[in-house]
Image 1: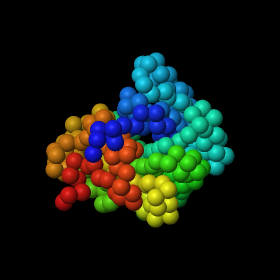
Image 2 (image 1 turned 90 degrees about the vertical axis):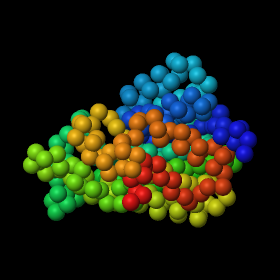
Image 3 (image 1 turned 30 degrees about the horizontal axis):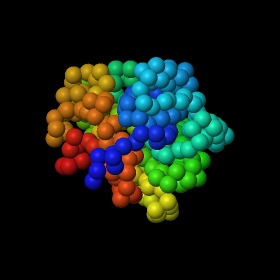
Length: 272
C-alpha cells in the first residue's frame, strides 16, 4: 500500500468532545497531519482556545471551533450547518464526547455511589451524552459524509464496554468506597453495537469503526497507576498521545476495507 493511503490532508473531521484531554490530542494530530479538525464541544470557550492554538501554529490544517451540546437536536443540526458553511464538506466524524467518570486527581472522591443507589438521573444523562449524542451527530452528518465519497464514523469506546470494570483498582486501602459507575460500561458497549448497525446499514456508502481505548495517564496517583499497570500486559497506562495515530489510520484510505470493526488499543488489557 502506498504511503499516500495514510494521507488525510484536506479532510474535514468533526471531533465531538474535541476540547477534552483525548479530543484535544486528536484535534492537534489531525491538524498536524493536514486535516481540518472541527472542535465540537459543549465548552465553547475551551473549543475556541484550542482552535486558536492550532491556527496560530500555522500548520497545514485549519481548525474550526463550534459550541455544541450533543444531546440537543437543534444544536447538532446547527453544528452540521456551521461545518458545511465553512468547509463545504465533511469526511470524518469522531464521536468522542462522553461523560467519563475519571479517576484522576481532578475527579477524586466523585465516585462513591454503589450500583444499588446509582441515581436514575445520572444513568439517563450518561445515555443522553454518550449514546444519543453519537446518534444525533451521525444522523445529522451522514448525508455530508456519504457525499464526500470517503466518509468515516469513528465511535470512541472503552475497554469497559468489552469487559466489566475491575473495581479492585479503585480500592486504595483507605476504606473509602469508590466505584467505576455502571452508566459508563453500558454506554460504551452500546457504541460498539451502534457501529455495527451503521456498517450494515450504509454498506459501501459510509464506513463505521469502533475505537476501543484503555486508560490514559493524566496525573493519577502512583497507587492507582501502579494497580492499573499491574493489570495490563504492557505494564502501564497509555500516554495521552498514543491513541491519535490509530485514529488517523482509521480515518485514512489505508483503512478503506475496514468497517463494523472494533479496534482495540489497550496495552493488552482485554487479552486476559
